[in-house]
Length: 514
Image (cartoon, rainbow, N blue to C red; front, side, top):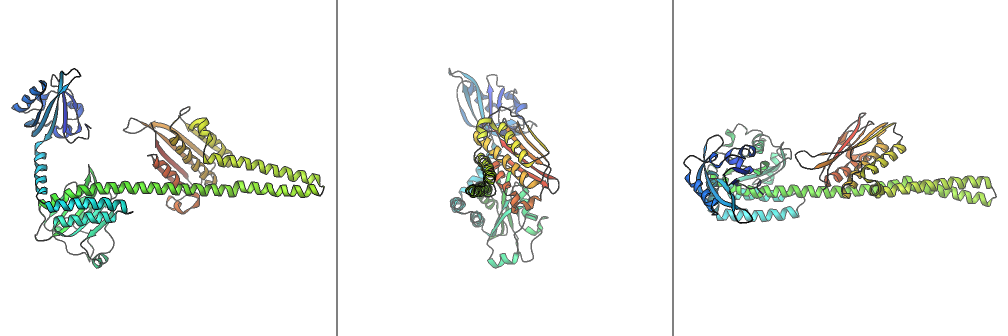
């Protein structure tokens, strides 16, 4: 809670030394937490700031003070107007052990208050924002693409700013260009004449890199106003508002040709920014819903692929053994009735061998559906057994299994996911890679910037390899999607590197479930 608060939070002991300092305090004063801890209150105060000293004296006597204005100093010496709430920190016995300061930059607070007042002056606009938020929420739930939700946001922005045209662009996850782009105000004929949707160059791309709104009286005067197609309608006044979530640019709203005036006003900017906050939530929720749908779809596809794989193994494995055994048993019966005991024994022997193979194959199939080895041996032991079996079946000349989790047990869901990804990868290598050398590696390692660990699974073969962009349509690699979805459903990451004649490397990261 301390770190996500928009207010600076500073805790002090009885000697008025700083003992706690959050991220908002860093932003207001310019001191990092490591620099601030141990400093005294006087370090933050302007020399003549008596109000702050008085309210801290009150706090040390058990009283609270709210909404007090004062003058403090930043780390660089600059003065800053602040608004403070100060209260005591009590021990369990009721005695005061220190004080806590909640502080806001008064300049930012005044700007926010002015913007709020301006927004509240437009009751009609506020209704548009709320209605749009409601419609967008319903559209996101009802639509598979979310385009209508984006269109409602763009249309509401056009209404708020009294613009002739409006557009909304959604940034790609890597920030390089536009993933989605919708317009309102253009006729169907005008859209057809303009041609393909923009990719995020020129002024559109600028707003994907800019955190503040951009207003211009004449759009064509800007250095980035280029790349418009020949049939694009003329656009003069311009208002662009980034759609942000924290420091991340999710997209932008673009409005042109102010109706009834020659330029967009600050009030227009404030209104569209308020809508942009709803747009940010909508886009974020839409992205989460899209990812969830993709994961569910991928899981269903993975299950279908597993069913097809089982059917394939039944047809080409177990069924063949049973049919062969049946044929030899029929031959045994005929030979026996004809009195040809030698031939009968040969046919019986062959039939029994095929039955034995069928038993082995059925055990393998059962193990493929639910690995009993995981329950008995744990993840490392089960993978070692699997690797040895695949090596024997494939005849790999060089096969290496490395791990650092001997004797460790993990959440059953995690163990199953890791085992299945390794199993699918090794099966693909055996069936399709034509490899002589294979390496399986599973390492427990610390997660970057987190107080936790992860399992890093790496499967490498030095076989034929393939073109990654062609694998989706190749039966030899249909399991890749299933492996990726299994990994991502566990909150992990999945990468594949492959090229013809150089082999394939699969790398999957699984966060360890506590």
